[in-house]
Length: 263
Image (tube, rainbow, N blue to C red):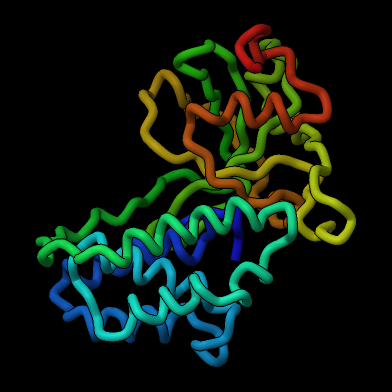
């Protein structure tokens, strides 16, 4: 499971549960049946183990928001929030922020939920992009440009392209032959005990919609077998965050990021 913060939905499983539960309700399942399906799919081992806390917290949060409540879910989540074991799962530097997120959820869950809402099923996202394809990203606010390569497809509640950033100087040769460009080097930001979370190159999933002129698919395509190694992680970013993320995490910030646009 990937995690990118201390919020209730700041990890892969919780984010997926939020959408999947709504889809199950939208497809006509009762809250009890939808909850049982989520627990069976996402919990590992004994569902009551602390390793499954994120499942119960996410499930309780989405149930309270939608009004589709299954017996015992919210009570279980409140018990997790009050347990010392939940905070102890977190590194010391993250515990304060996690405690804030838990306290906010506790306050919400202690309020009466709304009446059950009508839930419409989502259109499942798909992509026609394939590993090895290249795109030119132009930030609509700053005008900064990045050459991207599709390095994989993330398949959870849809299909999404995973991009890496190429080491491009902004010249025309890179546009014509992006398959010859290496990935941009990424800083190793995690301490030694989290070395497995470090990756030498960028790997991110861009969230949100962009106009075609801001994400232009190039003709050149590399051999997709060259993308099979796992040298990139998976960071979930809204497209407006991409420029700042690259600026802050590149070993050497590429010249195509316009000066003065990142703080």
